[in-house]
Image (cartoon, rainbow, N blue to C red; front, top):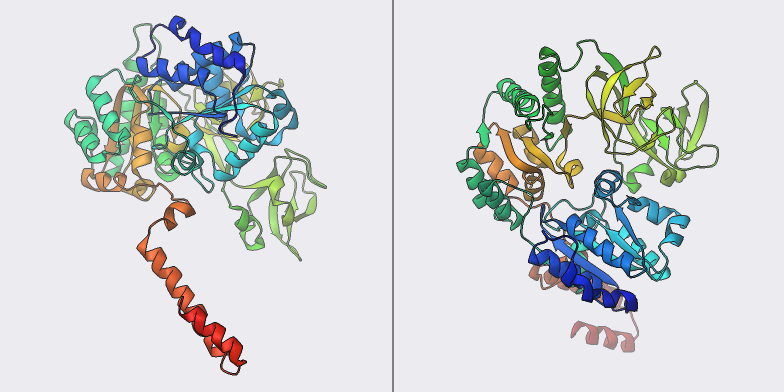
Length: 527
């Protein structure tokens, strides 16, 4: 598929690169646009570091494709990257990758068109294979943009990196960082993008943005003070709050920071002191293998269906009350009606834990699962809203004018994100809470993503600089089976040991064999 000739109209687009609509493109971006519009390859990879303007150059690519009479359809692995970031940048038809993979009508629309997938470094091997099959079946070109130095897929396989290293698809590189406006900040991010973590870390420390505060209570209070002053005091001159994001590698540390921020905002009368307890759900991210074992269906967890299944409707939710016989689980719906869930339907649902969180008027919340508001407006995973109040039934009024059912469930506080959830976002300032309680979830990829979110500034809070540097110097990169077996002495030795062991077993069995068979085993032993 890779060398499949592109449509002739697209080839002619190389002529229009000299009259680009966007005059502020760098030479690297211009080269990438020209390549994307003129290559004959069926797969094009544009590899760019965080903040190098990959989305900006894709606007120009889209313009060229449209002028050729073709269409470009935008996708991304997450709803945050597709329906929030891509649509905000003008790609109105942007959808999640899951829609492309699961929806036949979405596949039909891309026939003879161009597919653009952003944040492609987060695609698993399984999903990438499905995308390649779809593109081939629909005679569609594929453009992948991403950065293999950032977070990879939660599922198995780092598909974008493997396409480059093992598939032989050379990417077009876009390396000049555009996002950071502070030169020293930009240089530190540049080092992190090259995996030179210690050098980048030292530069960040030198400009005074790494704050070491050993006392946990004091550190978290400082983060809350920083969030408040950065958001509501250091405004843009138009009396508008800055866009500030707090990132923490783990939910545990993030929850502590959230609590402190909310207390600070109550004290400053930004949010109301009156709170309402709201039920929320969190996907516990069981693997396929774990979902097939009934012992993982513990009482109190919830089963929520994302597609219709025999006896269960998409969107329905059931609380687990126990286990039945023959791989079934006892569940009850919100009205108390019981049912038996066959766990061999594991592809139709996910498992969630639940808890109540306090919310107030003025609070910021983030949607964690797709759904609809009471007025029918779509709510997408990753969208942020401010709470403007509650109605008499306790339903949540949102800043977009919609009302969220109080039992919607798929929401959380919107002040703090994990690094994985923050990938693709750009804000004025990023505040990172990364103490010893989060070091096991730390890596050079996580640190690079977290630090590179800000346009203007970054602030990092930890309890031990030395421990933090050591933790973020470790890579979370996963190797493919082919990479692990190539020219590895230990693997060769294991193969040889296995070979010798097999031969010895065969020799033992050959003691009473016919002389001709013994001769065969002798020959095997000489190999």
